[in-house]
Image (cartoon, rainbow, N blue to C red; front, side, top):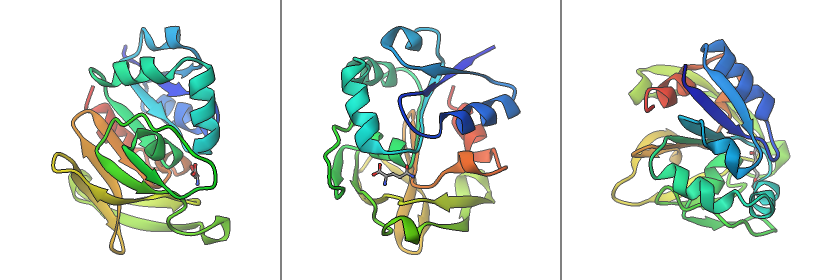
Length: 188
Ligand code: GLN
């Protein structure tokens, strides 16, 4: 059975692990570089990207995750999307992104906590609509030539992929629908 890691430095780790269980995939929490060794793929959860970024540095996971992502799929949701991006704007405290996908990101692009909302997005690649929860969500300002845009909300890009790397502004892990996860798992 394939094992999928969830970066467990900060954020909604338990929700991603629960969705993996729902799809009969073994999920494990990743806290240190050695935890990456048995993994087929890695999920970087939503949470607070400044905290995740700082802990990624102190735990020594920054370079190992970059290396891991060269040969394995990585999913980033919300703060995880920010961590996967190449250039990050907004937010009071800086993050050091992993630069896994060629996107420019605006943090808190949809406004503050009070501007959190839930909607439904039709995603062509999944050929269906999925519930999408946005919480102080970033959006993707622009993408490089090798990036495929998978979803927009109004005119803002909220889901994209480049090779092994899949990112979304919203939190599929906070809903009952596991189809975004299934799409990610198909990359393994
Ligand atoms: N606004 C957060 C950040 O900049 C992300 C919010 C989230 O993951 N729900 O990290």
